[in-house]
Image 1 (spheres, rainbow, N blue to C red):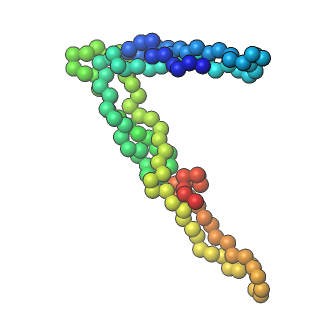
Image 2: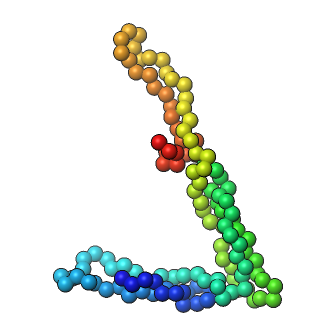
Image 3: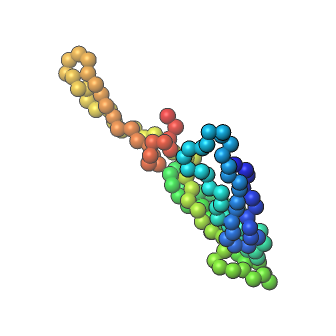
Length: 128
């Protein structure tokens, strides 16, 4: 498999291509990788695209935004590049713990339990 080509258009939706071939002498099994994919390019458009802002949540799934404007004197087609995208932040994620339960045994060895949760939702967002 070769590297993807440049986008076929300088402004808008185009196509990227690459060569896909079987290098094995016994043939290849499974599904071959894609030889084409769609691409978006704004390099030749009149759109001015700002940097992505911070994620709007400090722990969990959120949205990032950026400014996209049509430069003065330019002809801009369509609605332009995306102004938002999904993001996931772990900056303020942490474990929260509840109170310990009473001992399960009145005499001798027993068990105490407590609730432990990630403050942002799924446990993979919190460090162990």
